[in-house]
Length: 207
Image (tube, rainbow, N blue to C red; front, side):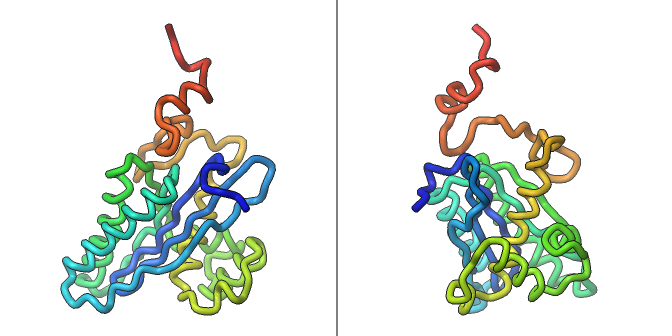
Protein backbone atom coordinates (compact mmCIF):
# COMPACT_ATOMS: atom_id res chain seq x y z
CA UNK A 1 0.00 0.00 0.00
CA UNK A 2 1.37 3.39 -0.99
CA UNK A 3 1.96 5.81 1.88
CA UNK A 4 1.81 9.59 1.71
CA UNK A 5 5.60 9.84 1.79
CA UNK A 6 5.86 7.63 -1.33
CA UNK A 7 4.10 10.14 -3.57
CA UNK A 8 6.09 12.68 -5.55
CA UNK A 9 3.13 15.00 -5.65
CA UNK A 10 -0.18 15.32 -3.82
CA UNK A 11 -3.09 17.49 -4.94
CA UNK A 12 -6.08 18.36 -2.80
CA UNK A 13 -9.26 19.18 -4.68
CA UNK A 14 -12.06 21.20 -3.11
CA UNK A 15 -15.68 21.58 -4.20
CA UNK A 16 -16.82 24.64 -2.20
CA UNK A 17 -20.23 24.62 -0.55
CA UNK A 18 -22.06 26.21 2.35
CA UNK A 19 -24.03 23.10 3.33
CA UNK A 20 -21.67 20.38 2.09
CA UNK A 21 -18.07 20.88 0.97
CA UNK A 22 -16.36 18.12 -0.95
CA UNK A 23 -12.67 17.26 -0.75
CA UNK A 24 -10.38 14.72 -2.39
CA UNK A 25 -6.66 14.05 -2.33
CA UNK A 26 -4.83 12.54 -5.28
CA UNK A 27 -1.32 11.11 -5.09
CA UNK A 28 1.12 10.80 -7.99
CA UNK A 29 4.09 8.44 -7.79
CA UNK A 30 6.76 7.54 -10.36
CA UNK A 31 5.52 5.40 -13.27
CA UNK A 32 2.15 4.86 -11.62
CA UNK A 33 -1.31 6.13 -12.37
CA UNK A 34 -2.75 8.81 -10.07
CA UNK A 35 -4.36 7.31 -6.99
CA UNK A 36 -7.15 8.47 -4.74
CA UNK A 37 -5.66 8.85 -1.27
CA UNK A 38 -8.91 9.83 0.39
CA UNK A 39 -12.07 11.76 -0.34
CA UNK A 40 -15.16 12.82 1.52
CA UNK A 41 -17.32 15.75 2.52
CA UNK A 42 -17.54 18.29 5.30
CA UNK A 43 -21.12 18.51 6.57
CA UNK A 44 -22.03 22.08 7.50
CA UNK A 45 -25.84 22.19 7.50
CA UNK A 46 -26.00 21.18 11.17
CA UNK A 47 -24.41 24.49 12.10
CA UNK A 48 -26.97 27.28 11.93
CA UNK A 49 -24.49 30.12 12.35
CA UNK A 50 -22.76 30.97 9.06
CA UNK A 51 -19.58 32.04 10.84
CA UNK A 52 -19.37 28.75 12.70
CA UNK A 53 -19.57 27.03 9.32
CA UNK A 54 -16.62 29.08 8.12
CA UNK A 55 -14.68 28.09 11.25
CA UNK A 56 -15.51 24.44 10.62
CA UNK A 57 -14.26 24.71 7.03
CA UNK A 58 -10.99 26.31 8.11
CA UNK A 59 -10.36 23.76 10.85
CA UNK A 60 -11.17 20.74 8.68
CA UNK A 61 -9.16 21.86 5.64
CA UNK A 62 -6.23 22.77 7.87
CA UNK A 63 -6.39 19.30 9.41
CA UNK A 64 -6.38 17.66 5.96
CA UNK A 65 -3.41 19.76 4.87
CA UNK A 66 -1.50 18.90 8.03
CA UNK A 67 -2.28 15.19 7.67
CA UNK A 68 -1.58 14.68 3.97
CA UNK A 69 0.78 17.59 3.16
CA UNK A 70 -0.55 18.39 -0.32
CA UNK A 71 1.73 20.24 -2.72
CA UNK A 72 -1.12 22.11 -4.39
CA UNK A 73 -4.80 22.91 -3.90
CA UNK A 74 -7.33 23.08 -6.73
CA UNK A 75 -10.80 24.55 -6.20
CA UNK A 76 -13.89 24.81 -8.33
CA UNK A 77 -14.60 28.49 -8.89
CA UNK A 78 -18.12 29.50 -7.80
CA UNK A 79 -20.51 30.04 -10.70
CA UNK A 80 -22.47 33.26 -10.91
CA UNK A 81 -26.05 32.92 -9.70
CA UNK A 82 -29.02 35.21 -9.28
CA UNK A 83 -29.11 34.94 -5.49
CA UNK A 84 -26.55 37.47 -4.30
CA UNK A 85 -26.61 36.32 -0.67
CA UNK A 86 -26.00 32.71 -1.66
CA UNK A 87 -23.11 33.75 -3.88
CA UNK A 88 -21.64 35.82 -1.08
CA UNK A 89 -21.76 32.90 1.34
CA UNK A 90 -20.31 30.52 -1.22
CA UNK A 91 -17.49 32.96 -1.94
CA UNK A 92 -16.72 33.19 1.75
CA UNK A 93 -16.61 29.41 2.05
CA UNK A 94 -14.18 29.19 -0.86
CA UNK A 95 -12.07 32.00 0.60
CA UNK A 96 -11.78 30.27 3.96
CA UNK A 97 -10.65 27.05 2.28
CA UNK A 98 -8.05 29.09 0.39
CA UNK A 99 -6.90 30.74 3.61
CA UNK A 100 -6.36 27.33 5.21
CA UNK A 101 -4.10 26.32 2.30
CA UNK A 102 -2.23 29.63 2.21
CA UNK A 103 -1.62 29.37 5.95
CA UNK A 104 0.51 26.31 5.10
CA UNK A 105 2.05 27.84 1.94
CA UNK A 106 0.12 25.55 -0.40
CA UNK A 107 -0.26 27.05 -3.92
CA UNK A 108 -3.83 27.44 -5.20
CA UNK A 109 -5.51 27.05 -8.59
CA UNK A 110 -9.15 27.66 -9.57
CA UNK A 111 -11.14 26.07 -12.37
CA UNK A 112 -14.58 26.92 -13.68
CA UNK A 113 -17.20 24.13 -13.46
CA UNK A 114 -17.43 23.85 -17.23
CA UNK A 115 -13.64 23.50 -17.49
CA UNK A 116 -13.69 20.66 -14.96
CA UNK A 117 -16.45 18.79 -16.78
CA UNK A 118 -14.63 19.25 -20.07
CA UNK A 119 -11.37 17.90 -18.64
CA UNK A 120 -12.98 14.80 -17.15
CA UNK A 121 -15.68 13.85 -19.67
CA UNK A 122 -14.79 15.72 -22.84
CA UNK A 123 -17.86 17.95 -22.68
CA UNK A 124 -18.58 20.99 -20.57
CA UNK A 125 -22.27 20.11 -20.47
CA UNK A 126 -21.82 16.80 -18.61
CA UNK A 127 -23.87 16.08 -15.51
CA UNK A 128 -22.39 15.47 -12.07
CA UNK A 129 -23.43 11.84 -12.39
CA UNK A 130 -21.52 11.49 -15.67
CA UNK A 131 -18.42 13.03 -14.08
CA UNK A 132 -18.72 10.59 -11.19
CA UNK A 133 -19.04 7.58 -13.50
CA UNK A 134 -15.99 8.54 -15.59
CA UNK A 135 -13.93 8.99 -12.43
CA UNK A 136 -15.18 5.68 -11.04
CA UNK A 137 -13.88 3.87 -14.09
CA UNK A 138 -10.65 5.77 -14.74
CA UNK A 139 -9.60 5.88 -11.08
CA UNK A 140 -10.80 2.33 -10.37
CA UNK A 141 -12.99 3.39 -7.45
CA UNK A 142 -15.19 0.67 -6.03
CA UNK A 143 -18.95 1.02 -5.87
CA UNK A 144 -18.70 0.37 -2.14
CA UNK A 145 -16.49 3.44 -1.70
CA UNK A 146 -18.90 5.64 -3.62
CA UNK A 147 -22.07 4.21 -2.11
CA UNK A 148 -22.41 6.68 0.74
CA UNK A 149 -20.47 9.59 -0.76
CA UNK A 150 -22.37 12.65 -2.02
CA UNK A 151 -21.57 13.97 -5.48
CA UNK A 152 -19.64 16.80 -3.80
CA UNK A 153 -16.80 14.35 -3.09
CA UNK A 154 -16.40 13.22 -6.70
CA UNK A 155 -16.75 16.85 -7.81
CA UNK A 156 -13.72 17.62 -5.64
CA UNK A 157 -11.86 14.67 -7.14
CA UNK A 158 -12.69 16.00 -10.60
CA UNK A 159 -11.16 19.36 -9.72
CA UNK A 160 -7.98 17.70 -8.46
CA UNK A 161 -7.68 15.61 -11.63
CA UNK A 162 -8.34 18.65 -13.82
CA UNK A 163 -5.45 20.41 -12.12
CA UNK A 164 -3.25 17.38 -12.70
CA UNK A 165 -4.13 17.29 -16.39
CA UNK A 166 -3.56 21.04 -16.73
CA UNK A 167 -0.13 20.99 -15.07
CA UNK A 168 1.38 17.67 -16.13
CA UNK A 169 1.83 18.19 -19.87
CA UNK A 170 5.20 18.90 -21.51
CA UNK A 171 4.41 22.62 -21.71
CA UNK A 172 3.00 22.97 -18.21
CA UNK A 173 5.87 24.51 -16.25
CA UNK A 174 3.92 26.38 -13.61
CA UNK A 175 1.10 25.90 -11.16
CA UNK A 176 -1.59 28.56 -11.38
CA UNK A 177 -1.86 30.61 -8.23
CA UNK A 178 -5.05 32.60 -8.43
CA UNK A 179 -6.00 34.76 -11.38
CA UNK A 180 -3.20 36.11 -13.54
CA UNK A 181 -0.29 34.78 -11.52
CA UNK A 182 1.73 31.61 -11.13
CA UNK A 183 4.26 29.87 -8.97
CA UNK A 184 7.08 27.65 -10.14
CA UNK A 185 6.38 23.95 -9.67
CA UNK A 186 9.92 23.42 -8.37
CA UNK A 187 9.22 25.49 -5.25
CA UNK A 188 10.04 23.80 -1.93
CA UNK A 189 7.35 21.25 -1.15
CA UNK A 190 5.35 21.58 2.05
CA UNK A 191 6.44 18.02 2.77
CA UNK A 192 10.17 18.27 2.21
CA UNK A 193 11.05 21.89 2.94
CA UNK A 194 14.32 23.48 1.84
CA UNK A 195 16.41 20.39 2.60
CA UNK A 196 14.35 18.30 0.19
CA UNK A 197 14.33 21.15 -2.35
CA UNK A 198 18.13 21.36 -2.34
CA UNK A 199 18.44 17.58 -2.73
CA UNK A 200 16.08 17.57 -5.72
CA UNK A 201 17.45 20.73 -7.38
CA UNK A 202 21.24 20.92 -6.88
CA UNK A 203 21.67 22.90 -10.11
CA UNK A 204 19.54 25.72 -8.71
CA UNK A 205 21.82 26.32 -5.70
CA UNK A 206 24.60 28.87 -6.15
CA UNK A 207 27.64 29.00 -3.89
